[in-house]
Image 1: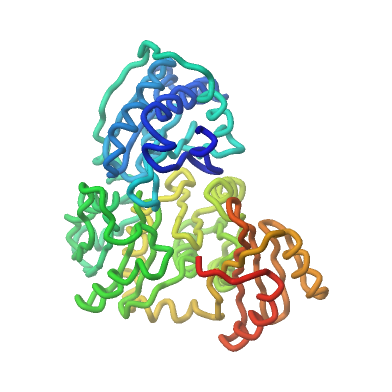
Image 2 (image 1 turned 180 degrees about the horizontal axis):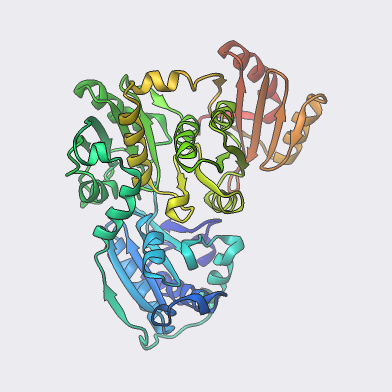
Length: 463
């Protein structure tokens, strides 16, 4: 049963089978064992060397799952700080703010309502994945365990005021004091943005908010809480046009990701947002790196260089992005999936800070978002296209062999660079799929290259 709930980066599965309160209790025991034994605890204040932060999202199963998790932790002698109903980025913030040994958010992110799970972090809010402790937690959880006495303590803390002050590092004074104003449509996707946005942004004088799908106490999603799927952005796009908004933003289920729509309802790619915000933050910092995932447009790299920054390509995934942020003294980072990372946020991602940064940048610039982004759209992109194939490695090898003159790297899957186009092909970790992203000088060139490349990769599928 445990092998069905542990994934590469977190715990996630359907409830009650295979994930239920008994499994959550076991995971709590295993998580506490890992966090209590990690290196570096000597630097933690003595009163917090056993303290783990626990939060939860709005799913109807989250209260019982979080309670069972906490029960398991406390049987191992860990003290629990319960921060309640929060967006996922508040938990690593709390770990750093309170100087604790780690944290867990009870959430299934953008998965349907009958899923749940846990996102686990260790010291400094660093994520725990398969290569950084999740396998150990699974092994600990599999050990036979009788109901133990809860030796650890428990307290409940409201950290919204401290979190607000932290997020407001990215929100400009002109908006905070109402000297500049923006009308913004926000789709909370019936997720945690429906709690986070009112607590942080509803009373900002410079923001007029058009709120969509903010109800999050019924366990129902009007649409899949995944803004990476274009169809899920339709409500945001419609609201922007109907209300004459300056901007639209759609959050995912646990509010750590967001997608941006301009005043005309056109979707703005997260790679272009990364280049734009990265340039602003570089201007403020004077120097540094900006990290972007390797599927990003070459426009992103060019915008970073134009602001004197160092462009840093990264593998896809928050573990790799955060590592690259730390290694390259980066001020900012972004992924196509809508995760945005900030040096001012302990190199972690934050949907709230991304929202604040985008609003501030737009208000400061004064031009419509579409006009700002016009200068960033320098190339044509295919978007991510999936191909079903039994032998993923053989298909990638066929692609490389077909273009002997290409510059090739294998940082994540395989990337081919030709004179007038490039592509990246990445294998799925869980399905017999290859994911293609291709960019060229024009839509016609993209179409032509797709005709050449696609037959090498397998059967094109819609997901």
